[in-house]
Structure formats: structure tokens, C-alpha cells
Length: 253
Image 1 (cartoon, rainbow, N blue to C red):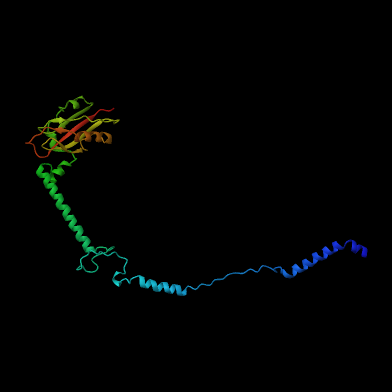
Image 2 (spheres, rainbow, N blue to C red):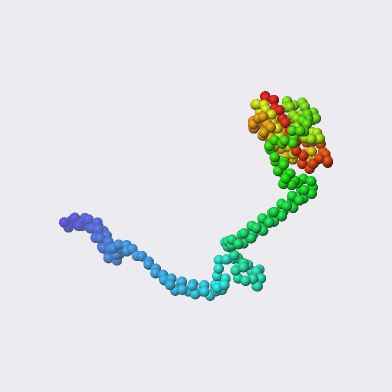
């Protein structure tokens, strides 16, 4: 035993010293038992701040007068003597009496303007009386034309066409009598009553339903178009409105 200790005395001494320092270090160093979680809670009170802000705003914003507390626009350029309510009125319907008064006034003005235009046309030689208008719009067979001699057209273009054209207009002759251009399938006879002024212009043209021998709409339109473009000689001695007729004999295509 003594021999073993004597032989390993330095090793045993080192082991003892090592354990001594370990125990000594453990005495001065205290290990943490666990991490403690801490929370920071901040409580803020806004009562005083809001109150102060409200007090400050009262001092900064001027008080609006009661007369200006409105959602309507105000005309600052309006004169002072204008009564309240005369400006900035909207969505206000007029009364029935004012409506009738306005409509009546408008109707009278339009009537006066119409009469003025009619009178100006009459003075210029282009206006016609109501009797003359009724006569121009007459579409039935005109018995007075039965005694008028039927004339052949003088216009070269009318003679060369494939439509046989004649007309009745007492003591007048044609200066332009065009041949109808038509693409109609059938043929037939169409009589057009015309009203001619002193200048030789056809101022009205209507189909003579009793004298015509066809009701083909294609032929009627072609005859009307040609009749409206017809011109006769000027005659100052003629009546203001002279009645006549043009007969178109369409050849079947």
C-alpha cells in the first residue's frame, strides 16, 4: 500500500488539486435557474390629449356665422337690395299659369313669323293663296283639261325616248321634258296633273288616279319624278297658277 502511494504520489496529488479547484470554482459561480420572460406594458391615456386638441381647435378655427351655414352657393357679386331667395334657386317647377302664358306667347310669335315669311314669299312672286294651294294639290280628273288640245313634246330628248309623252297646257310649250328612266317590268299609262307658274316651273305634280291606266308603283314614281323636272316657256300673260297634265305611256320592258 505504502509502496503504491509512494510510487503514484504525484498523480494522486494532481488529482486532489484538480478536484479542489473544481469545488472552489463551483462555490463562486452560480448557474442560472431559468430565463424569466418579462413584458413591458405601457398604458397611455388620451383623455387629456383629446381634450387639449379640441380646445386648441376651437381657438384656431373661427366660428362660422349662422347665415352662411348652408350647402348652397352664394353669389357674392349680387347687389345688396336683392331679396333673399331671388338667387341660388333651383329645382323649382313653374306654375301651370306661367307655362300656359309662355306657350301662348311662343305660339303667337311663331304664327307672326310664319305670316311674315308667307307675305315675303307672296311679294317675291313665290307664295300662293290657300285656294291656289288646294288647286295645285287636286288629284282627281280635271274636266277643264278635256277641251285642251293634247300636244307632242318639243324637247329632242323626249322624242328619242322609249316612252310616248304628251301634255295638255293651254297656250304653253315645253322647254325641258325629260324621258323617265325606269326599270319597271310592266307597261302602262300614267297621267300626272301639274300646276305651272308664270316662269314655266312645275310647282306641283300629282297622279291623276282616275285617268291613269295602271297602279304600278314603279311606273307612278318614274312619271312623278320626270314631271317635277319638266319646264315650260315663261309667259307673263298666263294666270299665276295654270293647271295642266302630262301623260306618260310606258312601253313594257
